[in-house]
Length: 112
Image (cartoon, rainbow, N blue to C red; front, side):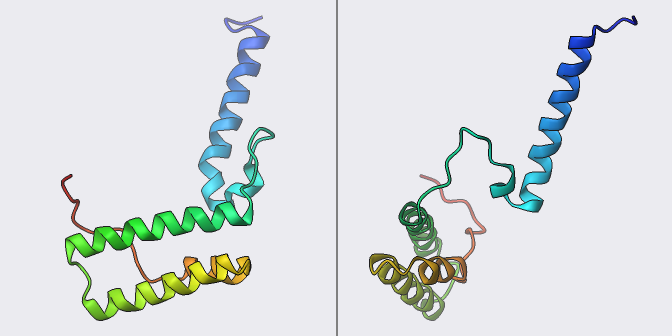
């Protein structure tokens, strides 16, 4: 046999397949590539994660003053609608509302 053992070649191939899966995962959605050890969060947990993420973005935008008060008001109204839908266990509606809130990360990084 050549300079590489069969087990070394198999390990290298397995590593390449894993690396390819990690690169492709964002393009196809992480749900299809989840390992057996990962558990999909409950809808309640997904609502909570969105709530924390969006509330953090809102706070960052308040401090950075990158969007005007009218835009921020619209974002906050939709945020509260999503929060209310989660509380009422209308998870599909809530997650759609959270996903469509028109807010992105701040352009300027804040110093803490």
